[in-house]
Image (cartoon, rainbow, N blue to C red):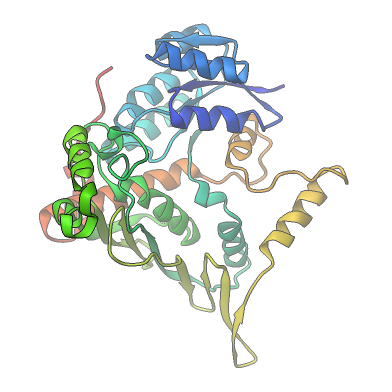
Length: 381
């Protein structure tokens, strides 16, 4: 029997979730809710979804649902997720879990108290590179992982300002922050998972905003006016880049650099352990064998193909590494070893908001200080 899903939010993320569920055999999107009824109706008609609602709470009460996909802006995640949990529905949220740790913790607590599953979107947790690194780590090939560095850095990639996305991405009122919380969440979640998701103990970091300088006419020429108009229209008030370091309870360390605009190249994410290390993309495994230093490349595509054939019927391989299929299997109980995406996302929030708060404080903050200083920014809807 299919897991019946309601999607809250008919924008880009809602479209992505609805389309992804259509490729999962045991999932069915049966309702869409959005205050923009035209958008909700268009999405429903495109994918054959039978019911459309303007009020998500009405959808939770009226539609026969098992789970909900939360596909709205970050500061709307908490009220939608809490209402879903109160209705006994499993919750799958767009990344990040919320705009602040306080709101993320409230969502996690609500799902725990209701006895429902909490999942959070993070493609990187299910990439072939992450799965290969996790396989090596679980097999002991890395020894004890103790260091990870993650970089997600763009040269020119501010949402809306640089030509994609909507103004909501660059407003604290809707998003809560800039690249640290937008794209950094992928990296932090991936690396926390590979480090064993040990509890965050303390975080330091800094954020930077040099918008005017990077759109100087000497750099962008005649397009300066276009960028200036978009900056003014959007109310841009978030960071351009941020860096930080998190110390975990087991002694391991995670470093992050996330930028929408920085005059530096991006770099591969890496994890080092006591007996080996990995570079994620392009994937390389570093170790020593018989006293020879070894750099090993793995056939990730070939591995996935074999696993798909083994799980399939001999002709049509099963898809490998699909986060939406994994979420549905988690809900229906068929997942052999569910990835705790909710727990990872909550721990990630300590790192990300910790960077913001440490930057404001001008020093490292402990986990307790981050939790104390974190304030709710959830919308009252």
